Length: 162
Image 1 (cartoon, rainbow, N blue to C red):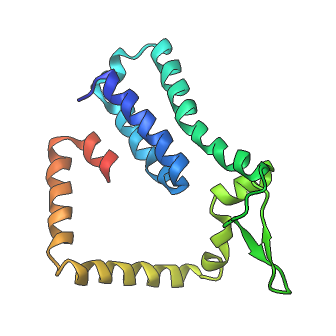
Image 2 (cartoon, rainbow, N blue to C red):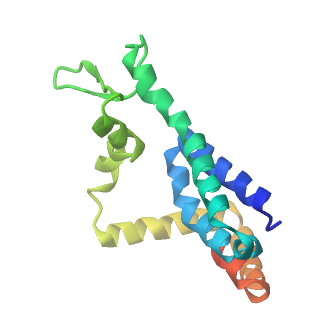
């Protein structure tokens, strides 16, 4: 715990996770916070930081599969949209703009864009209610209590995990 090897493993897993599911980049700020506040940070050298950057780039290279596969004109394509006539139009992921569109989740923007800030707050309340009902009101308070206990013992770890 706190060693360079642990940091390197976390970096590789972060890159592979993002290559597998781009939404995993949402936990990168917490990982970066933990890395910056870890004991290993005090002993990190620029050469090791460069090595971590290379590890991240190599693990993210799995993303290259999408544009390379798109260039072969595969028989089955799941990325695209339907035109006005109801025909499926495949998206060419070898184009950087299309790949960014796909990886950023913009294909789902129509699901989020219609919400006003008040409606988003109501949806958040509904999600908290589902969590409360799903865990019988036990899991959520216990989780918050555990986070508070951890915060009192190790603030940086608690903030990174929150």
